[in-house]
Image (cartoon, rainbow, N blue to C red; front, top):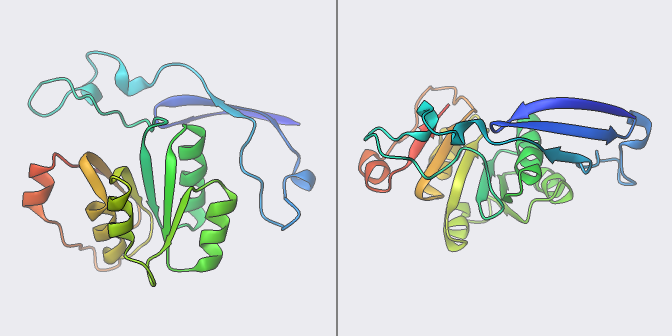
Length: 188
């Protein structure tokens, strides 16, 4: 058995009693989700007086970069980083919607705990996520401008877009008016 400490989403994350690699795969050959993890401490960004707790207008920002159990996190691109983002969101207690083009990756997402999965080839993922009330946070990991645009469009009012995937052309359509009116935040 191993243990480790990782810092993610502004929380120290303590992982205890991790099975050894010989026992870390399920009967289907997929890695087991992190079941022996717990968040400890207070979120760093919620301390009063830190820049992360202030909006640009100087009033307190009530949203937190740390997912809560009431949050919907939409993850666009369930690849090497996407499956990690999904597991961290689940550990933090968020509800997860996974979006990808490949059914095999969506099966991995289900196995890791995603409550909703959408194949963007066959479904309008943005409409489906908006039908759930919109995402509090959308994480764009796919290196596609379309995925980044869909992630932005899936957000609810005061939502946050996290851009990690880098489109090869270095551009995406960005609706400034809707972003400002809805109070959306974009981070990288």
